[in-house]
Amino acid sequence: MAYVDGFVLAVPAGNKESYRKLATEASVLFKEFGATRMVECWGDDVPAGTVTDFRGAVKANDDEIVVFSWIEYPSKEVRDEANRKIMSDERMKAMGEQMPFDGKRMIFGGFMPILDV
Image (cartoon, rainbow, N blue to C red; front, side):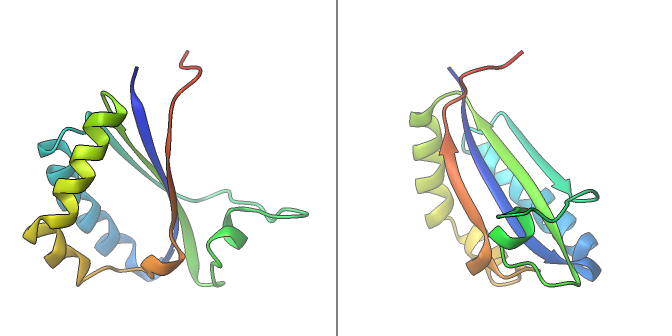
């Protein structure tokens, strides 16, 4: 069964094109290392919650947009190997030096799908 890495982060609104460009470049590496799909979503309807919400989860400022993204892999094993390769790849390290967002506020995790209709 497939495996999914999910991400939520806050990007300054003015950095939308820089973020899209970086994500496009990174997608080439993720696919090279085994990802089957990568989706980046720019928030346009992210309401405030009563107890918690996406904006609070990433401590988004008023001038930031919440981005929700995921990367699909054929299996957790492929994902684990891809992440190992990504973390040691010089191209990714170079991209990491030009992040158009605060990576310390990004939340992420791996997920095993239980329903895909």
